[in-house]
Length: 251
Image 1 (cartoon, helix red, strand yellow):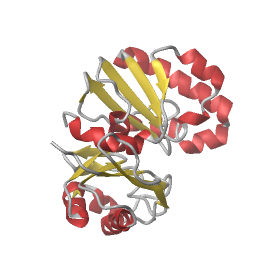
Image 2 (spheres, one colour):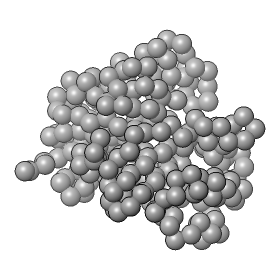
Image 3 (cartoon, rainbow, N blue to C red):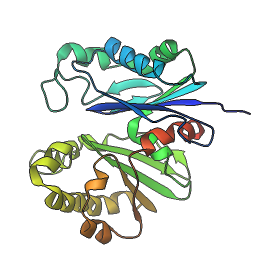
Image 4 (tube, rainbow, N blue to C red):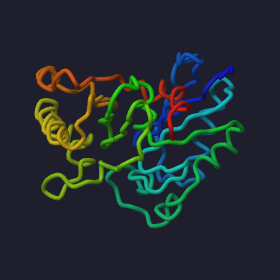
């Protein structure tokens, strides 16, 4: 059956990127990026994605990745979009209520006028890189930490690992998030990421770990070499490229 074209949108804490891909996952046009607008009501979110989609070629279906806990297209919780001015700013009670239980799949399907799949952004990212062999973990390093787990190519139920405590009252989201990267500098931050990877290894016992997201490219060569052959650095573009393969997952 012909798949046609897929609109893929990767929603981050600071930026939203989108493109249109063919059946092979090849970008038909250069990815377009807009700054994530704040404060971000659900209406403003749908409008922003609608405007981004309108600037791209028409597609037959859409895939959208959103940070946070997403179940069956419904947002259970999202860490950034409930804030008044973006990541690490004050949480708005009104926005928190709007986003909790927001049926993003239904709203975006209506806005785009095509079938739409809404997943956690790390899950879409993972769809673009996993091989389907064994247990594969995907961690995305960006504004915070994204996580997705695949077993034999099938997507496991989402866990918000980013919200788990690490040290000094910090969650993974803050401990290796972008603010700490900028505060610590690349070398020290890279070593911190390595400590996190080694701490998680006996928890997941993965066959392969993929490190992606915009900050994976900042990891030092020394740390990358020390991570081992079962850890692979993947490009941030997977967050868009995975938009096609995401439809094949067991979600």
